[in-house]
Length: 413
Image (cartoon, rainbow, N blue to C red; front, side, top):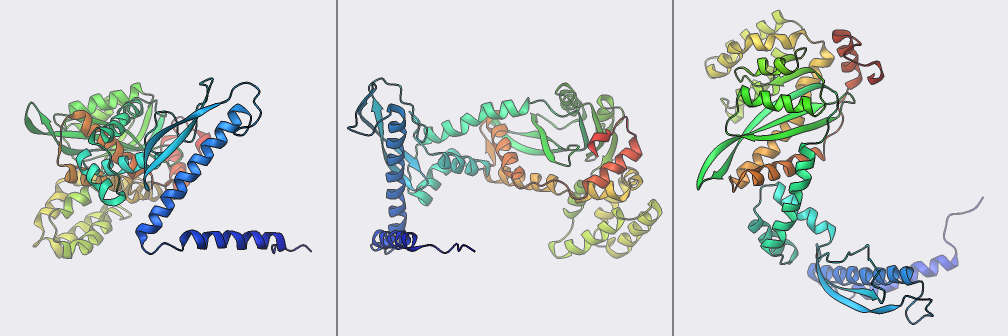
């Protein structure tokens, strides 16, 4: 049997590396010293790698025998990185055909820096805020104009994303809206950002689009739904929404077979606006007993229990559920597998949380493009942590029982 334990040659190499590292770090007394060392090492590695790229391009080492194209000095530039400024020396060739890949021509930021800028922008920071944050965190001074270039470059990506083709079937979608403040003709006005979140046949969550309008209304939602159809959506099994008047009719005008359902997540969120923080856990538990009831009769009994326990203190919550009862009842027709998908999907809440945090931090957007760009980045940030829905297969099988093979393809199961 052979051993994986390193032999004498490998042991000497490991010891040599350790000795070199000890020598390199011997002068590091503070975290700043370590960062400076890392910065110098990164700079050295990049310059060595650029030399290796040039050697592969011309086919010989420096001062080696040439078969045609040769080196022609170096060009120097400063690039920004998460470790501060790096002084890069890019080799040139006489033919002018060398195109470095590690740090490209005219590149002035390493990729990680751009991601940091966009992540800060997605959290609602202005370009001026980001400029200050990069100085505070990284000691890097990047101009307001350069930061604006990075964020503006996202605009084209956002437009392409907004017009991308969509899948033919989304079993469940959520229609939601939040208010954003936008400057218009030297005034600050409220605008409605319309958001559609869908779950595809594979159980994956996906934001289908973002739209900005003067107001949230059924007529505008009709245009949003029509656009979804033009982009390829042919069927939606269940559309979850808030209690906006005329919205169910708008959905059924474009997707006649779709069942409309008052969104339980929205309803719980609306209820908690009336509840003190100390009581929220107990009230949520009481509401959960309503929408997790097996039958409409059991749900009605749980609503009475809510009234008995909390009616005196939170009359508005009881009134909210009684007033929407006819729109809640349809939820109880779904089998438990489908109900569970609807009320346990946290994506709409996590998405709302990120977008509301963005609007709180940013407060006022200079124009519509800035608002949509920021919301797009917030969506991209939120969706990084999304996972496929648990227990999706049983839900899909239940959809097939409810709607038939004509609407739920067999190959989706």
